[in-house]
Length: 157
Image (cartoon, rainbow, N blue to C red; front, side):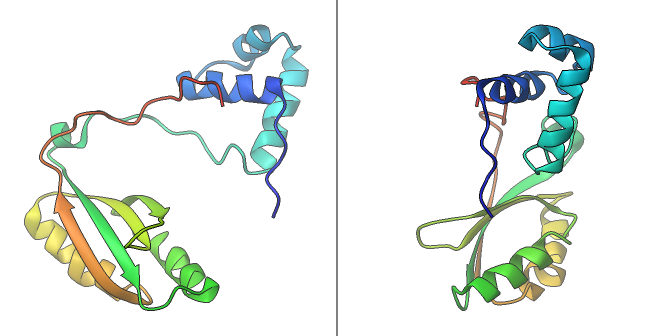
């Protein structure tokens, strides 16, 4: 599927929403120079096309909530489209997985997991990650502390 073509107004809307996902439609419209109804139409098209996949809150550092962050590299037995699709469908069903990326390099996927502690991660590893389809190898690393948290993109894309 071909990604939608974004014009400068779409990019500006996305940049503004990354900075403040709670910005009202009226404020968005004023910031980009559109009427509120035209702005809302554009937002609905961005949502319908999958460019905007949802809205979320940025939560304080997981460590402040007593959570342990684990970065996990997963290598699959086979690197076929079918194997990737099966793995991706299954990993989406794991509530402990906060992020998942298809990677280049030695591992096929990099995922970020949040667990209560090492014992909870052991459970996640045993009951979830090792049971994902096609998994050949799992390498885990526990985060010691957060240095930089994900934040809104500053370049406007």
